[in-house]
Length: 115
Image (cartoon, rainbow, N blue to C red; front, side, top):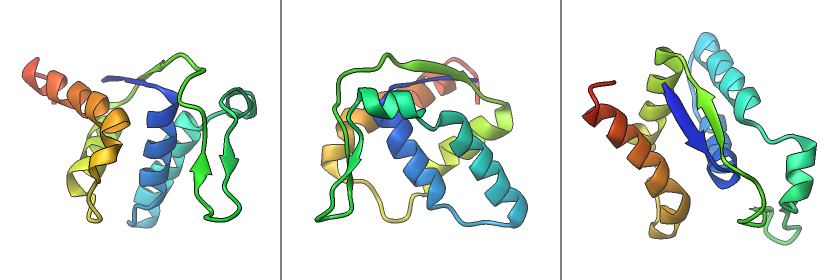
């Protein structure tokens, strides 16, 4: 299954994946996904990625990089989809900018008879 991810989606998904708990095998699968979608040093420079020293939160420019298409195995696709459906802390309304287009990709794949 394909997902088209912009850099904001990649950064946020990387964080969500990193917060998952599981068995050693599950954690290794999450690490593999993180490694796959992680931004390169060049990409981080292009979007001026920084960690705010006062709050410890990451910051970056919303413009600057083209989205990247990723082809995921059925297992990895299901794993990513499950992260969103099971995310215990929940989401806040201002995450709509990156979250809604990503969730729409999952919705579209379900409507097309996939997953």
